[in-house]
Length: 297
Image 1 (spheres, rainbow, N blue to C red):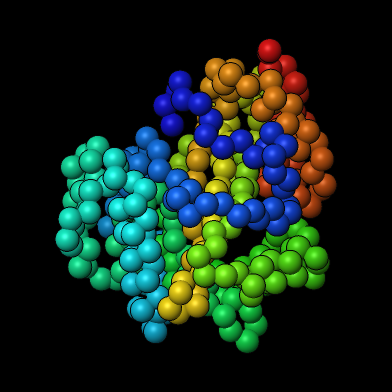
Image 2: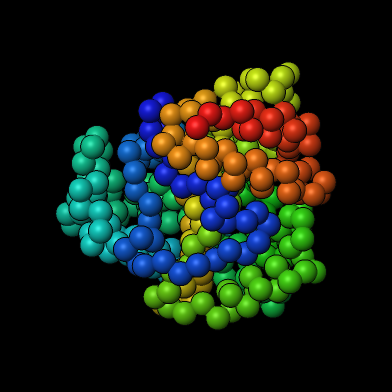
C-alpha cells in the first residue's frame, strides 16, 4: 500500500475476534476484493509462477473441470462488477491500469484465474475425512507451505492452529462446509503481525524487537480476507485468500487510529500463550501493546 493510504480492512479493531470461525455472508458483488494494489500484486504472482511454480501451484488429476468452473466464475464476476479494472474480450482479459493482457486459453485454468485477481485460489473437495486441498494457486501464504498442506484434510491443514481440532471451532467449520449452498458467499478475516512487507511468506515468523519504540516503525499488519463459495458443477468449495499488508509506520495517519490501536492492543493482550506462539508474538506482544497505547488521538 502507499504510505498515505487508509487501511482497507481492520478486523483487529474488535469487529472480528481471532481464533474464531467468524464467517459471515456477503453479497456476490463483494466476493472479490480489487484495489489499487492490483498491478503490484499480480506482477509478484507472475514472478512466482515463473521462478517458483512448484512452490505456489499444485493440482491433482481430475480437478480440471473444477478449475474451469473457477475460471468461469472469476470471469463472470469481473465482467459484472470490475469493468473499470478488467476488460474481457473473447479469450483475452486486459488489465486497464497497465495494459497487460492475460490469455484465457492457456492451461491450467486455475493458474489463469489466479493471474487475474489478487486473491489466492484454493480448491477443497469432499472426501472420507472431510474436505481436503486438491488444487491451489497460493502465492501469498501466511506462514504455511503448499507443499506441506497439499492433499490434506481440514484437520491436517489446521493441526497447528490452537483450539481448532477436537474443539467446537473445527466442528463448526466442518458443518459450514457441508451446508454451504451454491451461490452463497461467506467471508471472514484473520490478522497477524509480520516483520517485513513481503507478500510471499511460507516460513513461520518469530518477531523480535529491540525496544517498544521501534514497534510501529518496523512491523506490518497482515490481514487475510477469506471467502468460501461452492462450485455448482463439481460441488467443490473454492476458498480464496486476499492479503492486505499494512505498515504500522502509517498508523498515525489513519483517521480512526485511536480506535484501531485500542482494538489491536486489546486483542493482543487477550491472546493466551499457545495463541501468542502461533502468531510468533511471544517476544513482541508487550512491546507492541505499549507502543499502541501511546498512539495519539
